[in-house]
Length: 457
Image (cartoon, rainbow, N blue to C red; front, side, top):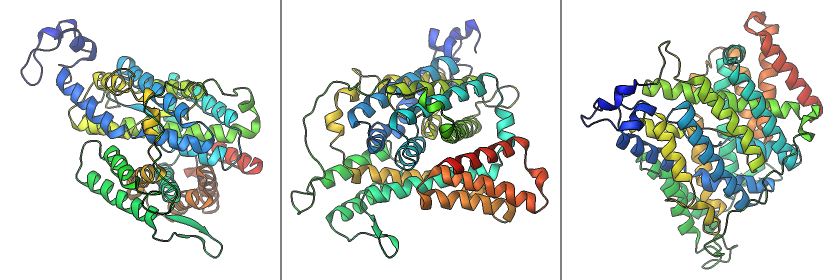
């Protein structure tokens, strides 16, 4: 933190520092200004606001009403980002995570048939354990136990899984009795999806602010003629403009039922995914922006991880999958954002009754068809494939488990199965090739949990 008299100093651009805000957030100390931080917050919000539409859409596949999912998404994004700004004082967006929502909906609820309330209970308990790990600062033990190649592979596998979901939801990929899956006929819906994907890809390639949101809007507009000009199901259905927030699914969480040992593996997978997503995000952003402490570690890492963890706990009773750090926070960092004022700005942009009262526009957002949100899912999958270049593919004792983790997630339609077989194959290959010293004791515990999971699902 800056010294009490820092408010009398000048900011990096030569203008006077901004009084109490400078003292609290350390603006001068970090070479930034109120204007820079606010603009960085707007940039991050535009990069990540697609979650306002996409998360409720995915949750609706699990049985949570779109309007209730929307309400939960906005509230947890506001609370989590605000806590990140005021407590951890880092320029990071907190919102329901892509990957976590897919794990919740398509692996737990749809895939394993876990009751919705118990699935939310699993989210809750994974958050509780996350809090314990964060508060007692045992991240290094966990980091050392899971091989780096497996961490990279799991991120890539989730990316492929999300892309596959996007292609399926768009109707581009359909089931086929002969080949299991096949491409759909190039009718108006598929052509609309492809056009929207192309437009969104152009927006992303040109690095336009809010590219994914612009892509959703453009694809929705393109989909309006469906069912009107062509004899297809109507994709965009107008159902009014204004509606109050939907709290109908709040506190629909079965905390006790989720403690049944049959659900422990799911709690572990949620914990694992959220923990490493948060850690990798903090480390990546701290490296890019120089947000490090005197020891060279990510700044306020313990506080940031604690905020991420508590956000996951709160997400469950609100009625959504776990909240987590968003890598889209890099958009604000690239704009010069360096302090918690960025996150506070993001939080205020989520706050209803201010600039973007999404809680009261749920009917308008429900206009967005699956074709439009699918374009985002496909491209988010692309973004998550970035770590594939870090996997040591030439080391087969590392590459084979990593490959299994990547490929089995989309092919089994289960993030959990990809992780389980990836971990188990890692331990087996290391033991049988005489490299058991590479396997940390904690990894053996993880493998045992995977066996338990496979035996109970």
